[in-house]
Image (cartoon, rainbow over all chains, first blue to last red; front, top):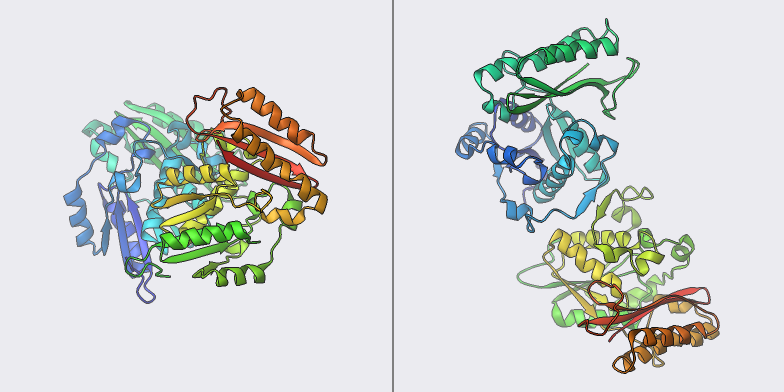
Length: 267
Length: 267
């Protein structure tokens, strides 16, 4: 597969399918940066901790391919599980040292999640050999873990984090939003509201005041069960205790009805 | 580097240089099995536990290249440390689960040795992309660990273990033999003698009798300090306690003067 004729730059947008406008924004940004844009669609079994979550993950393949075609994406890469994991369902027997942030936040709630994520992304990089790869900032910790993986193997490529795309009412786009009932959908708005509150009041309130307000907003919303709300250092994901830290981010995860959602906002 | 024009089979013989007849036998066997034979020469720093051992490892490069040329080897691959380990001297931050045998025998005496060995062999395989690779049985545990690594990544290639080549008096060929003084050289013969004794008496004596005889032979030789002598299951390297085990091997490691040597013999 000699993709790189002459000096064409190859971009990869790794996805699990069930594409929405967030994914399309990645494709569009990729098209500005590279001559050839590859979108991979692979629902990676090893990054799911809950088999039910894997099972019900949406897979609207025809819709996805039409969307990518309409968007002018050059190549859709859809490997099978056996192609990516020849020994599946045996677990992978290699391990990447992703640093302590692997075990925080999503890593705490989803054991082994970031080994699964970074291993499949390494395999996709090996298969496609891109010069540049695009990920959504919505999975903030994921981008950090992938950058760490790229450093571990010193891969000759660039990782770009792209802005979160939101519905008009502020809900972060996610393939999982499809599972939300009408009531869930309305309740879910509190995540963005709590993040926005935190950002808007960041200079006025203390960290502990910000956290207690934001958590209260979420905890007072019926049908929403908070996993975490944190204000953290962007590069370590450790909670910050004062505002001297240069780059900080608020991150939230909560179950809304039966659906677990995450969101974040740079402060 | 499109090595595989048409259907040519590519063989790799990974070495650390300081080539001797043992290495040449690998090249010869490789030439019978493949159209293109690549020999890599790379003194892999990450598999040395003793910096002095790394420093004094012989590197007679011109001699090696002449030997390979005379032997009709097609390609010599001599990467630099920076090419193989771009982040060197930072340690590699990925890990392969090689199974419990990683920590036995050589793995016990040389901490981290087999992570270093299998990581560099993985990198060499990635770079050369051979169909088949040849290793000397002298490093018995190494061959097992490399086979385990190949299974972990399900690499599409074959690993061949080739017989130990010995000097006329029975000493297993090794790049480290060059460090032996004349007295060491004579004393070192006890390793092969103890192994041969074990093989010759395998059906006549019990395991514990075999072990105590062999160990006594070595311990009674001046200037030889035994690290281990074991009779083990070929596939697990765990010591066997009776002779019902189908495939067993005697393995020995000892310091002869200042030089640590290993040897083994299938029983």
